[in-house]
Length: 158
Image (cartoon, rainbow, N blue to C red; front, side, top):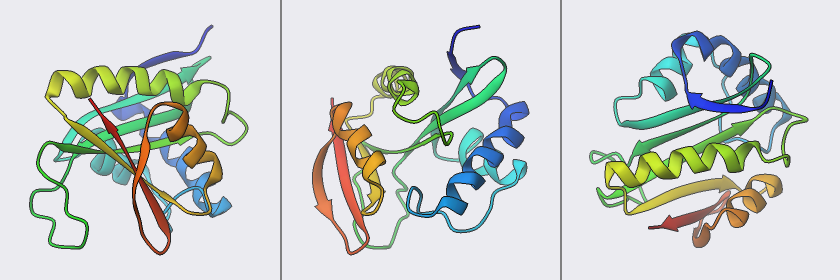
């Protein structure tokens, strides 16, 4: 069965948490440090209060990646606040499946959903040590716009 991209389902949450937890254990590919369970995946990604979309990449009934897009938090009081027409993207692809077009297919669906929602810009903030993630966002059209001590922020503009 070929790779399909579809809206993430609550029934995907356990697989999504396992995928993300493996990346957390690896280290540099995600800013997350605490493990996820299915409920936290649902709250953070599938049914996020600021959520625009969350897509799963599925190959032979196995979730091998997911991508979520949320509106920038209008109540964010921390540094680097984004304007309300911005969205924030998060992409996770299973170990061993990276660099094989999974992320590109996820972004095609996410970009279409963002356009429909009226998003003007998308922020991807990536850890400096995540060269794979930085290269991925560069390949799909994001450009650097801000740097922090541990991160590089890239933007996609419609």
